[in-house]
Structure formats: C-alpha cells, structure tokens
Length: 227
Image (cartoon, rainbow, N blue to C red):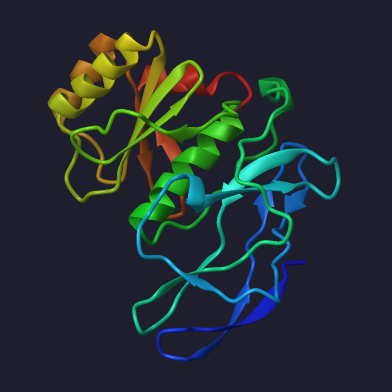
C-alpha cells in the first residue's frame, strides 16, 4: 500500500497530504518509496538528473533500482521534493532482466515534460536498459537520455519531430556506436518517418497514459519478442 505523509509548503504554508506512487519491479512486485516523515520538503529551484531519481530496494526480491524522486506541486506554484528514507543517489548495479521474463509495462500518466521523460526512462528500463542517465550531449530539442549501447531522445513539445531531429539523434548514436530511440508526444513529420526508416532509428509515440507505442519496424525490433 502506498504511504502518505503530511507536507507543509514552506512558501505559502499550505498543508498537504502526499501519497507516494508505486512502480513495478522487474519481479512484478510494486515498489513504493519509504517516505521520511521527519524531514521537511525541499523546494525545487533547479533541475538536475541525479536529484530527480532515487535508488530504492524492492521489498519482495531486494532488487535495487532507480525511480523518480517523489515530488508535490503546490497550488502556489512551488514544486516540493519529498524526502525518501534510506534512498541512495548512486545508480544500481545488477544483471539486466531477460526479455522473456518481462512483466507487463506499467505506465505513468503524462501531465508535464518531466513525466514524459520519466515514462520514456521507465520504458527503457523495462526493455532491459538498467544504467539510464541524462545524456552528456544536449540535443537540439527535447531531452537526451543514454544507457549502455543506447542513445535516446524525448520530445515533449507539441510539434511533430522533424527529419533534422531524427538525423541529430542518429549522428549522436553513431559517434557512440549505439542504437537509438526517439520518443515524441506529438508524433513525426512524414519526412521524419521516412528518414528514420532509412537510418534505422526506432520511433515511439508517447500517449498521455505514458505508454510508448512503436511507429516503425525499428521500434518493434528494439522492443523484442518479450514486449
């Protein structure tokens, strides 16, 4: 069961009750961060990838994975980071899950650009990429993600991805000898679809339920038989 704690906004002094979300472990059990009710919330002034994720252990199998840092949006406009007891910021270690043992993907609802990045990162982890991080190179648009053997881009804008967007991701992947995947909320221009097929770029569309849908053969290949 998800845990709830009282939260007072330090900006406007409003009282809230925050309920921690649950995420699916590779073993199939739900993982809920253990909230630290003794620590006050921290206002988020600047975004940093390492601060947006915490490492939490599964209570069923003991597996350690990174999950989104719990946050609460106050009506006054403040974004509050909720403390997690015993959380670590270092990336987890361990074997990648076998595709054949993959459980059903459990999406997160997309309401913000951060939610879109979270949905894509969780989906890539579901595919077996454990070491997901913010990409060193910033793409011309959207947010870049990286993992061992993969370069990915998340575009949460309302404009369809262009051929140039696809080509830039492909060039980044080529320099790192990696596969590449593009996640877009608004879909793709027709020329972008054609360019992705010729370059071998996997294209996914993110719907607001947070479930990435493949839109070309490369994306089907990346998902593999366990999807």
